[in-house]
Length: 522
Image (tube, rainbow, N blue to C red; front, side, top):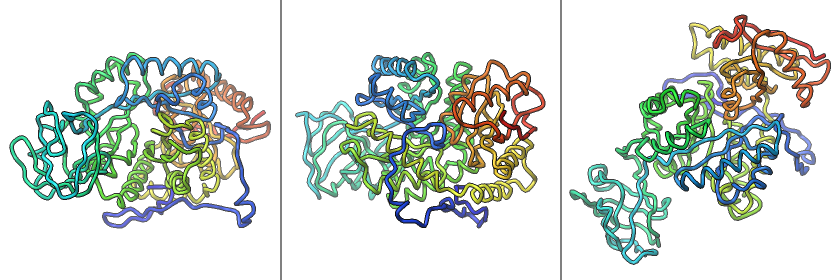
């Protein structure tokens, strides 16, 4: 279900749409420029940025943190342990200059990818439309304009005559003519000039490569876990067993690391429900997904995945080419702005910048504009009607009734609206209570009060949740009083405001949420 999920069900279909929105009838007000300053206490959508040469110095990181950076993404498709460690050290130094701010660390795996090989003469080669091109699985072969190596040894067994192969982000289209034992004959469908080591996609083909290979395991076990990462973003996940295998690989050392599955292939789409069940969160990686399926269908896949994540109460990040033009330009295209806003209205928990932050000319400006778009989209959502839609959809999914904890959280969101509360407090060891509250998309921010540093970090991926760490959750009354003092000190509430607090009778017991109350700020 998405923000616009009506709760109605049709056989083999979900009824989707955007959130109900409330906008002014005054065109002058609508057109007024509002270069709002950053207030991370009011924004709900989370911001993830990729680390790279453009943004990994301390000064730039401080500016990005002050613009609302929630998650720093370390892309292990590039760089080595030394460069990533230097960037992580800079991030920690930047955080020292931003007291009270939290930034979680995400390791994004390289994953199973297919690439073309090297050329005998180096440089680039020119391909003409209509010519034949041989793709060989002998990766030691140094190619030319008529024969190129590729990294996928099972290519001849995976494709068939008529199959389409895309190279270099789709700039080269090849049609398979004939398959041999260790090579494939293709016909070039368009003129192009390409360089070495370009990515290759096989639309509609199940690629028989492991999600977590030798490189991925080494990156996770020998860099990620020793450096205390908070999230692993697993690339090219094709089924739930990929995630279950990753958890087994990490073992006890990775028990506090949450796994975000990247959906980048039609195989991942086919197995989405199993992947969602096995994962802590989902990333909609639209780049490779748009190569694997017709581009005009990507928006449908995005809405479907967002809806199912929302209904499951699991965070979803929308990624790839959100503000792509800002790699070179100081302002985004209007289509990009609408893309980001629509993702927020559809129910995404977070949005991500890739090349815009890592290699772009304007990384700080990019996150600033991304933030402002999210805030503008959030400001027009009709949260009361949104809650009713979500509630109806969830009840349709649970005809036998809701679990106690979820029922408490659902009703707490309704109560917060009815009494016009300024804040919702969630006392939670693991953060699960705050995520359940967030599932129902309250207008109010959720303050996750926890004694667990990992729960603090994991709030970075979920929409509308702010962390507040205490030494202990013992003595509920005292903990609530401390949380209210903190909320008052940072401007979340003021004297006389009403706050809805959600907690359990059994203190320090995970999953024991069964109480809600209204408290007044004194």
